[in-house]
Image (tube, rainbow, N blue to C red; front, side):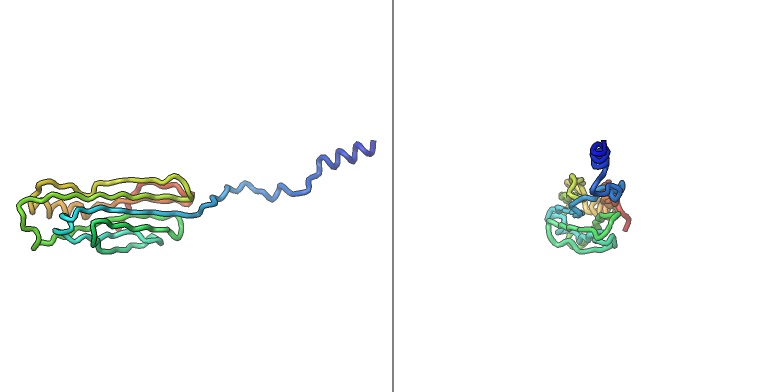
Length: 167
């Protein structure tokens, strides 16, 4: 009988403590968060305007740089979450270069957010598409399109939603 009591006691005794495992969410092994913006501009557009890219840097602060080639790419690795990422392009006409009767060009933006090794969230936008437009219409379009912003919000859990920032 004492052997049965001893066996029962050993059966219900644990060597480790499961009490130390609290109901904490499992942290992702991959802590990488990345936001990549790539814009393609026709050379015809760069010939008639200056383009400035206003964007959010890794800390979420405003930054800017001049677009100097047909492809502009910026990769941001945020330093903390949540964070609002995004870009706004400002188009300034080169009045002395607007000498034709009609203009045709296009520009597109692809931006991709990825957090914790999850599925990337991608969005593509047409920034501008013009075919046979007059100088007056081009200047009007530059003014209008300079107000557009594009972006994504990355939450602390890695959830990514499309949301344009303010600059």
